[in-house]
Length: 71
Image (cartoon, rainbow, N blue to C red; front, side, top):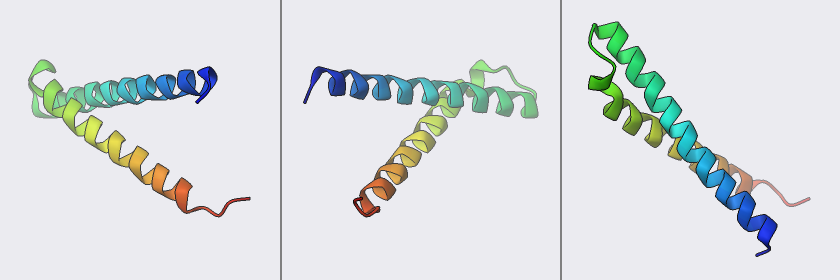
């Protein structure tokens, strides 16, 4: 593995974490606003939901990429 590949892998890992956090924040905020509560009450649940959804999305994308025929 080259240094460039290692940097790209680290970037993708950090991007996955950032997208999970953003998705969790937005899901928690939406749930709180729709139920009339404070955002902090739903942030953890929203973060877990967002994290699980993003992980499943990356898993599905990885499987599709591996199934595609080589050029």
